[in-house]
Length: 597
Image (cartoon, rainbow, N blue to C red; front, side, top):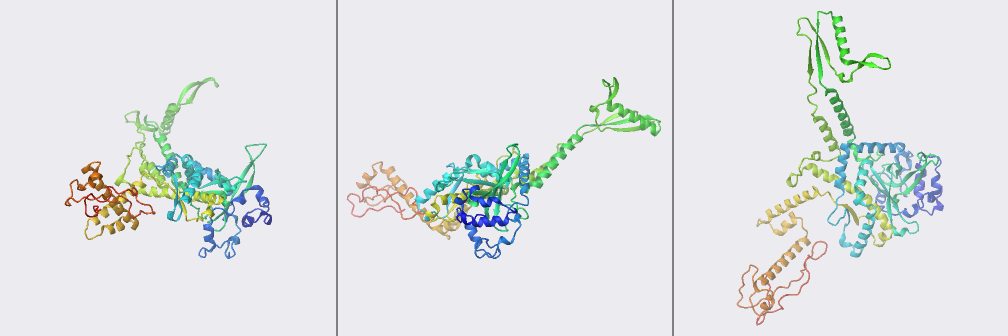
C-alpha cells in the first residue's frame, strides 16, 4: 500500500481504511491518487473543530486513532459495520426505494409538501440563506464585504431558489444528501467552482469512532455498466473521497444500533401502514355492502324438508343463471348471470303462510362515515409534525391571537431542519475559504461565521410580533408608575442595552430639535433664519411665541450627538448640519440660547 510515496497526505486514512474494510485485497488503496486525483487538494481543508475536541475528550472514552494519546481508540474494533453501512450495504438501494414509494403515498406527499414549502423563504432582498458574523464589531468592513461576496458566489452553486425545495424533500425521504465539490485540478486556489449531487444509495460515510460521530471520509461505489448489456451493472468501482470533498447533510436520526441514518418519514411508517390498510378495508367493505340484498320467502306447502330444500335449490339455480345458445355445444345451455350475483337469502315457508314473497334488505347505512379513516390521517400528520388544521382546505386562515400551539411547534421544527441544512453548507463554505487562502489570511475561526435560513414567515413572525406586543404592554404599565424609572423599565422589560438606551435619548433630542425648526418655519416662513437674526422672537414648538423681552434666540446646533446605536453606528439621520441662524441675534447682549430637548 502506498504511504511514503503519497507525499504524506491521507496516510492516516489509508491505515484506517485498510484495517476496517472487510476485503482480503483492496487494490484501490495502492493507487489512491490515480482513482481520486483531487483527494490531496481537499485533505486538511475544511473545519476540524469537532476532531480537535474529540482528541481532548476524556468523558467519552473515544480516544483518537491518529493521536499520540489514543488509549481506548477504535482500532480495537474490527467489525466493519461499526464504521460503514456494511451490514445493510447491499440493501441500501432497496431501502431508498421503499422510502421513495412511501413518500409517493398521497397523504405522505401532501405532508412533505407542507414541510418543504415552509423551509424555503425569501426576504425582501430575495435571499434565502444569509451569512451572519457572530461578532461583527471585531471584523473590518472590507473583510465582511469580501466574505459576503464569496458566500454569495458559493451559495449560488446550489441554486436554492429552484432546487432548495427538492433538497429538503430528499433529506426528509432519504436521510442523507451528498454534494461533491468541483475544483480545477491545476488551479485549486480558485476555490470551489460548483457542486454536483451524488446518488444517496451509492455513497457511504466512513466514521472514525465507534459512536459514528466524526466522519473520516466517504466511499463512492461507482457502477460500471456491462458493454454488452448496457442495462446490467458489471461491477462497482470503489472511489474514496476526502471528508472535505463532499458537503454531507443528514437528518440527524439514527437507528437503534446507530449504524444507519434514518429519514424523517421513518417516524410515520406505522401510521402510513395503518392508513393504507384501513383505506383498503373501507373500499372492500363498501364494495361488499353496497348492493341491496333480496330475501326470498318461498312457499313450500306441505313438502318434506328434503323436497323443500331441493325445490328451493332449483329456484336458486334458475335465478342465478339464464338460458342461452352455445355455438360450441350447438345447444341451449344454462349460463351464469353476473347481474344476479347477489348475496340473497332464501327461506322456506310452510302451509298456512301468505305465499311466496320477495323483499329487499337495505345496503350498508354507514358507508359515508369516515371517522376511522380521518383518525389515521391525523395520526399520520402528527407523526410528520404537520398541523392537522391544514387538512381541511376550506378552513380559513387563523392569525393573530388565534395561532395554535401546534403551528408554533411546526415552525420550530422547520427551523431545526434549516439549521441542519445550514450546517452542511457551512462546512463546504469553510472549505471554499481555505482553498482560496482567505481563512488563514483573515484569521477566521469556526465560531466567526454562521449560516441561517430565513425562518417560516406564516406563523413565526406573527409570534415574534405577539411577544413584542407583550413586552411593550408590560413596559407601558411599569413606566406609567412614578416609582419605576423609565430607563430601568427600558432595560428590564424591553431588553435594551446601554447603547440602545443612549441612542434612544439622542433620537429624542434630534426629534425635539427638528420640531423646533419646523415651528420656526411655520411661524416666520421660509426666511425664518433672517427674521430670527433681525431680532424676531422664536416661535415655540406649540405654535405660539415665547417671551424674552425682545431678545432674539439662535436656533440650536442641528448636528450629531455623542451616543451611538448598537454595533457602533451613529443613529440614522444624525449627520452633521450647520447651525441655522448664523450665531447671535442682532442687537442682543447675550449668547444665543437653544430650547431644551
